[in-house]
Length: 369
Image (cartoon, rainbow, N blue to C red; front, side, top):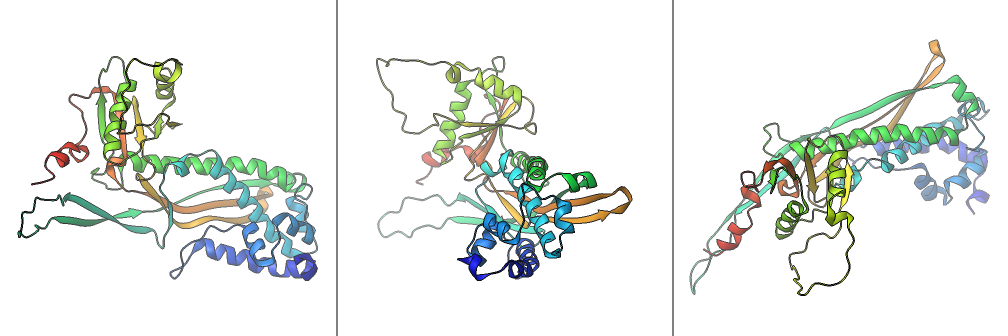
């Protein structure tokens, strides 16, 4: 239907404006938040056709056409497709290998390079016993704020004239995904830094570190259960574990994770404080040595984005290459300090237990004054 309404020339005439508008949406402004928009989405909304059908309509075949073909075609508007194809390939790589999308509660667009995030302290809001005709006492819920700085993450790469001339855009996109993977790994590093250290320079938001029952044996299943039970009582679900390769091997080698059993026990105990019967383990070198981190992705942190993935390019005549630069402005904000915790295999739990703010018993025993 759309192809009957619009001719090839009409499609091409509007292409530069479409790409410029998308870049405007991605950058955001003082009046609008940045939006991650893709060419396929825009074409579907504007013309009601898929990206594949659009390419056919304008005479572009990504399986055959190279970057040089596009630049040398008589219709100069076609070159506006190049950054969109490159961006989409990088974006796919950013979403595939890195794990940060799985440990955040949400991705929040913002304006500016600094975000003001709330801090809420409920510690003095416990209920009290109220006798007949007595006044209900007031507690306090203190509110604070912290400043979260965002960073520009970027990288450039050069495309030689040989690649421009002989490699189709489809094949080139396969290799560009690896470039996106590297950008995603940089995002993982930022996320891990916030999980471990928090956003405050004084370290007051650092993840708590607790020990194990036996430092000779290291982290055992019982140590995981201890954290899972406490977290569940606090309303947290630590179904995500992050650690290095050695820590992953040690946990996978625990009998609880590698041995199969059958039959039933003589008696049955149903734990009504639920603990996970499975967990996801992500390997990352940013985890401190001999430690694993348990995370509740729904409460640990959020991602803040001031500018979506942007592309810029320039021709470098001296060495006959095309330089392409990809960048985005983003950061992470820690939400709840008890939503991520480190277990250190070299420390004793008896002297390195849960911090006071994870002591749920004091709220249960002293909740009614």
